[in-house]
Image (cartoon, rainbow, N blue to C red; front, side, top):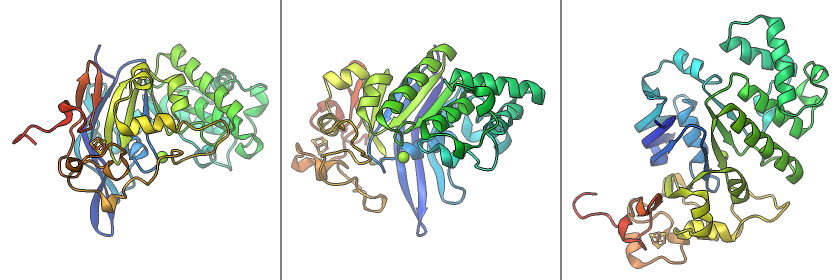
Length: 331
Ligand code: SF4
Ligand code: MG
């Protein structure tokens, strides 16, 4: 079966004070139909920029894809016009964010906003759109959907608003849902309910999901495949069981040790010392994790590791593994 989404050698640059810096720097991965792929890493590792690149939602004049390809259902999105991309967004690929308040419009009712999505992509009457909206609210576990449909976002709790966001995102039965920290702003109980809901919808609608998170607990519960990102690059990629039982990259190992405890509000990953190098201070050669790596060797600052398969279906980018050592003259 062909992958639904294929990202190949993606580089996304941001213009900062007239210079171009790469927030995503050579990232390749695939998402298969019905697969849930987790993308994990600290803030600033490029995971959100990557989803903005896939959605072609980079801030105009500031961010742009400078290299690589994003292929969705066999089509390179690069060649698509704004109006073609608008057709895909919301219909074939949709997105949910951490803070629904920023995505929901405070001056319109829930029902109006749901109907907008439906009427944008489908030829149906307003009456029909309203019926579908109520049904969608029911599907995302909102009780009294026929009264909620006429309420405004501020009348709902955070968890309810996130359910509404999910209803909007699945309104047109997308093939791919990108969920960027969808439960981070919610308390633990609500978080678990929302994840259950997402999983249920994913199965029912045969949807693929890219789940962006800094929370490995969420990954363990939800994902089939996991991509660990650091400083704009993939440092490890494998299936979820292998990642948890046999992590290989020193960064992944540290992430495992710092899995946030219940109720701990973390956006940086707990106990790992140091921070991700800023875009302006990215080392040109060597491993980008070297400053924080407990296993760093002198050569880690001179040789740039390559993401390569260490074992079947398990890719790692770290000089501790022979496969990651660049071949002389090739790179
Ligand atoms: Fe650590 Fe070196 Fe591996 Fe980088 S290449 S993760 S610094 S051991
Ligand atoms: Mg982010």
